[in-house]
Length: 211
Ligand SMILES: Cc1cc2nc3c(=O)[nH]c(=O)nc-3n(C[C@H](O)[C@H](O)[C@H](O)COP(=O)(O)O)c2cc1C
Image 1: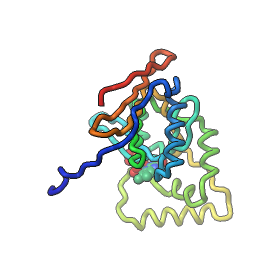
Image 2: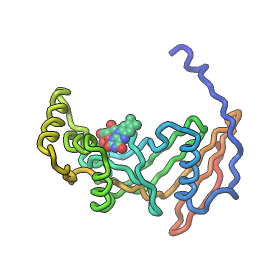
Image 3: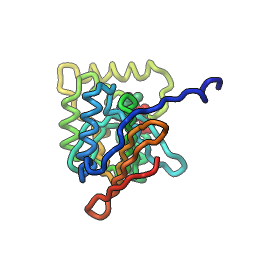
Image 4: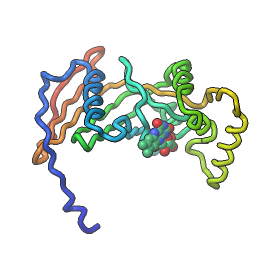
């Protein structure tokens, strides 16, 4: 397509100093996440999550909803494509792109379901309509007519009218326990900076990578 080859942005970040990086990449991620938030990155918790099925790699956006000492938590329908993929192969990769601050973080690791009680707690904190939407969506299955979704939404709205909306067992959180985390900073003239953490038994190794 005409013009694409001329789209070019020169970044301006500073060189990353290994000395400034926390020994624990989850803690370092929290620092970068706070920086993204305070610099008004829109939806800094949006990440591209890739999972593996037998014959393809499937990518989509999900929202990070918690960071614990163990890893990174997102919520979804357990019977979706991603849910089925993770059941077969727990290796996942997720990418945060924060264009405004010229940063990227790539997390690779293993995904597992969080405890049901934690999923229930988060589900109960969601707005009523989001709860109904979780019940109404047969996520990732074929929708023949948009009215079918609207009708399912209405059905659950009526069913749970004036009641607490129960937790749907097919929905909940996954935690990604990281095995590697890469922090990327855009710099001038494509001389970008990359810092890679890798889990080696219980400790983290840390090194720089060529851009
Ligand atoms: C900004 C953004 C945030 C999203 N957040 C979530 C999320 O937290 N959980 C989720 O299941 N889907 C989320 N989605 C929808 C997914 O990208 C995807 O369409 C859906 O989960 C089905 O994916 P699958 O068929 O690959 O399992 C989000 C989409 C966008 C664009």
